[in-house]
Image (cartoon, rainbow, N blue to C red; front, top):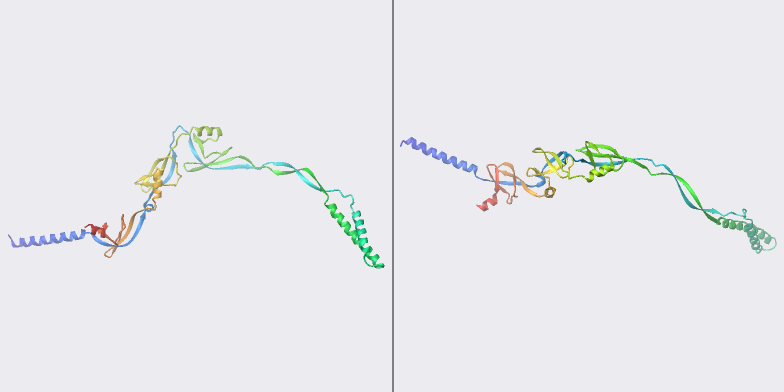
Length: 314
């Protein structure tokens, strides 16, 4: 065999072997150092659809029912009313002795007698006169006080004018159709819903009662927009425009129990965001298990396992 051919084959074999070893080395797992770990909750990855429009999907021949938002009463002031009642009135009793002469005279006599007991000679006379004067004044005052307490009572009918209660003329009723609000006047206060027949709100009380009594089950077609596009679903209850609906496995959730379960699980940790260092470069990855020993195995730029757990399994 040609010597040069043999040398070429050997060199080629060596190159191929070295290239294979290099390729094996490049594709083999590498150990990366974990820099930080942050939990990812269900709420952080939850998808929602926003309600854009709601249309009642009942039997086309049956009346639709719209939601009453508010019913504001319209009033006018009540009429003036005369109010009469029986009242007990206390009167001052008539006084016969207007000048309290009897009390003055009696007081003067008593005062004079007492003054006469003081001193002697001219002094006794002065004391008697002074006692009579003071006694007269006191007697007059005593009689005056006594007369002021003499009263009697009578029952009298007294009347006054008062403003009567406001009279309700009707109600300004605000209702909502497909997210749009309108106002209509009604002569009575409505319930929570009003029938809509041929595009007009029914306001007659008897007709509302009849249509409500014959109301069949209603469902709603709910239109929405989401990150994956627009669509619609049928729901038993009508959400408000702008409400957010849960999305689970790519489907809008319409079941109340499923929605409650998703809402309750919003704080559950579903994964971890790991920042790692491989050589001098930083990277991030989402892993379902929290790294325990501070390392990760990276292969072809992807996390394949926790380095410690992989070593134990080998």
